[in-house]
Image 1 (cartoon, rainbow, N blue to C red):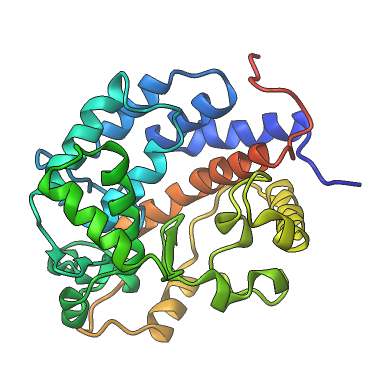
Image 2 (cartoon, rainbow, N blue to C red; image 1 turned 135 degrees about the vertical axis):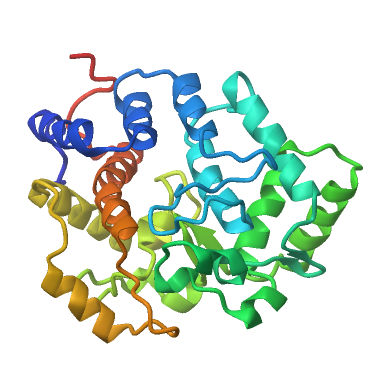
Length: 307
């Protein structure tokens, strides 16, 4: 029998989201499952947009740098893409702002945009190790970020403009490269990962899941990856059913993390801001996973839920 989320489970998970989500994830939940307004959702998203058109302000829960970067723009695009035809209404100004930011050329090399570790300002704010500035990363393009931003420009940009031509050239440059950025996971190669051999018991938590690459049953990758995807969906259902009240990490767990992952400058990773950021992840993951199940018809009820 195919595992699905029941309506009773939906209401239980909804209570968790209602109590704990930041406004961005709450608005996303309302839009996806309860006939909420797409414009309302995008207006909340616009709160993370800077004057330069980029995004920051903890839109990624473990990076508290308020300033814009190419990677955090990609995170914003993940939210933007949830809304069908976002160019109308509130999404129009968001898209225009992003185009302005990308056209400025900040953090852009001849080979593309730098990635999450190529931003010096990250070190001035609470962040986890994968955001810590690496001078070497500031001199090389992040292929996943570059492909993601190039696709955005080719979709919304003005044909013939300098930035459009640049994006077209970059997309052609990396056309034979299978590295992608999905759900925030940088530069992973689905072929090298061998997602068809997915085993939940042995799949590292930092690796992207098969459902991130195979976004829906309509994907051209679904037939050959069906076994892995369906198994992945089963584990998502199980995880959601087992999700209880959100808990803060214990002092012992935080200290163990600091010892296992020492800060290169002798500082601490687990600052108070990260306690807040990690708490935000709980409702975000519920909403993200429920959206995945929605796309694969793993919800045992009809949408929208209006009560």
